[in-house]
Length: 273
Image (cartoon, rainbow, N blue to C red):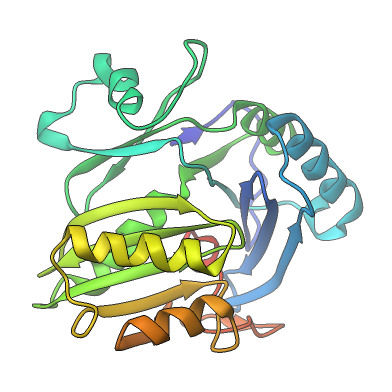
């Protein structure tokens, strides 16, 4: 979704993507002339934020990071929360958008509800963005686009799997939550997000999902993305109970001033560019 005004646009070769959640925020800057990610920075919070304190954290980053004082040709904002659901486009009716969310999450009557359209599978992502963050970014930059992170995640996984004949289970890991995206013959079978505190929580939700989909841990193909590596307790416990566990790939061709932690980390942030 785009938010625009009539301010004069200063064209540059820089694009900015910002990802925000109640666990913190991150941003990256792409120089389109050199195809280089010039900056990729993370600002995690030590405790869970609220939308109000998240805005305070964002303001602090904008006040202290000189890179964010530059002019950008485009700005993308990625909202990370569990307040979303996918609806097949042919069944979607905009007047019922709040009702779709009420089935699986608690929302307020005053919540603003936004929509993303996924062309890869003809669906609509209905979600609640952080409106105070949108307002701040608009005041700071004027025109910008925003999406829900699950839109970016699902779209790019479906693009990667469009010619695949098998079933894949993607697990996108963060510090306090993870997402499961299941595809079969290139079609979306399931998307869900889970909060967790321990590695036992993580493996319980993952194995439960496999069981519900009648997928055998001995044969299921699990692909890990995000904030995880072979030393991570999440990987170790997944590898203990599931035979086929591998790491994914962003398949981007950017140059980097500072190499990311892996070729599957910051998946939604970088793929939003």
